[in-house]
Image (tube, rainbow, N blue to C red; front, side):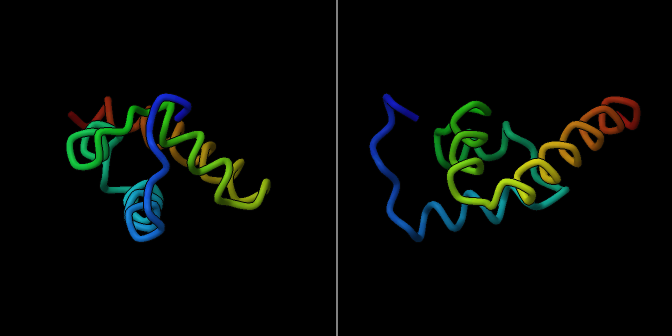
Length: 71
């Protein structure tokens, strides 16, 4: 997010809430907030505790793999 301006706290909360949802893709977040997948991961890493971030990444990877199967 080095080239992105700092997001206001209310927008950060919205991005985090969307990212934590299993029903929202990175593409949806990019459409709504203009943040790439890398930007979202950086925001989540800086906002969540280490263990929570690792658990989220594991869930996102596992869910992403399944999502391709269901499409």
